[in-house]
Length: 258
Image 1 (cartoon, rainbow, N blue to C red):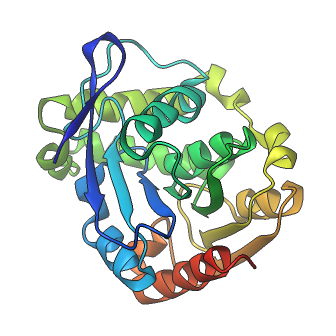
Image 2 (image 1 turned 180 degrees about the vertical axis):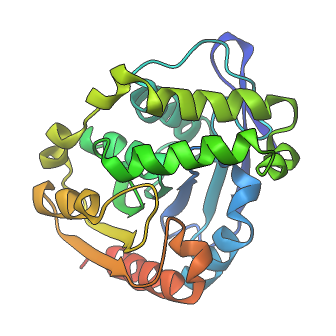
């Protein structure tokens, strides 16, 4: 896969997926411990089902992209949404319509990006996104920290290599910091005008259903809310056929102008 050089000689690792160039690109944004490889074959399956071309990438600090050079702040997702993502879009698919598909942190980043009302953005699929820090988030991350301490998350190393510990601690320590408890992006939801599909598992260990309901009720454009029964934090992996169908139908509506 190719790399895109951005600020300070850092590079973003990305992959392009084939599809009809007349259709919008599907741009996939991974979770807080994720990367391109951790989507597994889902992007390819969705691109094939919709006919759309795709763009999958590792954010800075993750996977095969450059390592983080500084500590995170309360604005780290804003930086990803308003600086890093626009650089990638301009450098790889400039002036091309696109639909964002964001999971967890990637979902929140999609919402922040959407609030800027980019000209070529056609829609957003938000999966297990956060707009505030809730009690389930804190409890879920504390459980992940305990699992890390017990060596149960060693599998992350196959995706992040020598950056694995930095990736995990940047995620867990930020979300568990007292100062991050005040993080909240509800204020920007009324600025999101494009159609959205909001997906949330009813057993999500990292976020209450309140998160999805808040996105749905406060966004300006048409929003389709789907609460998935017997599903936790990763619907596209846990209930793949259902998630693929929901996304495929939504993308068809967006590309048909409905």
